[in-house]
Image (cartoon, rainbow, N blue to C red; front, side, top):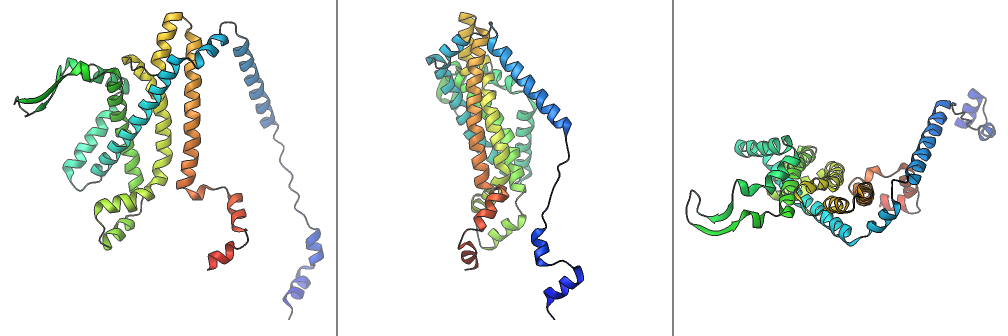
Length: 314
């Protein structure tokens, strides 16, 4: 029996009728959405117009200082603080995360105490502490402990400058947060992956670096990107210890010429530029480590390319 003929006899629908059928979808009217869009657009235009024509906002001063040499030097210090603090924070975070997952209770308690303390105290307090370390230890020395002979000594004020204090505060504080991010990423990997590595004789270090961490990157990258963007803005706290960053030099300038709002706008524009660049980089890195996030349309078109099926079958 012809299956097609049987189906037609049962349903009474021919192939020609199916070709004439078309799906007509009528969207539900949403007047509230259009009202919200109109209100948001009107408010945005009004706000932009009010800011632009405000006579107290000196756009000429903003234009003059946007690429000023002092501002660019502060911008470069901000970039340095962010990059170095994040690199050191990642190293500390990985180390503390591994200690937290260790079988040794001493290592676990030490790592937990580290994250508890540096996540529980404000970063501003930590920055001020490191900047005033000389009040606690006037001299930094290397030698035999417990009042033994000293091999080398330095004056703390000469070593702990504003930039060094900023690096210590930002990187050590960031290490506590990165430790939790890395720990969550490691724990997201199936324990069977570690067991498979052990079954073929891999050492714990190789299992961590070649098996666990590459798979954990899918979980680590998104919060890491957020931490990096947050660090770009958090460096502005360094201004309280004269760290010579973007916010510090902006304050010095507006204290001299009293153009407070204009210099704050200059700093804000540069912060927006840096965070925008970092956000774009985060987007591409996330796509690199999470191929499943590729849009469905792009994946379908890639699968329809000639020879794709044959290659996959081969």
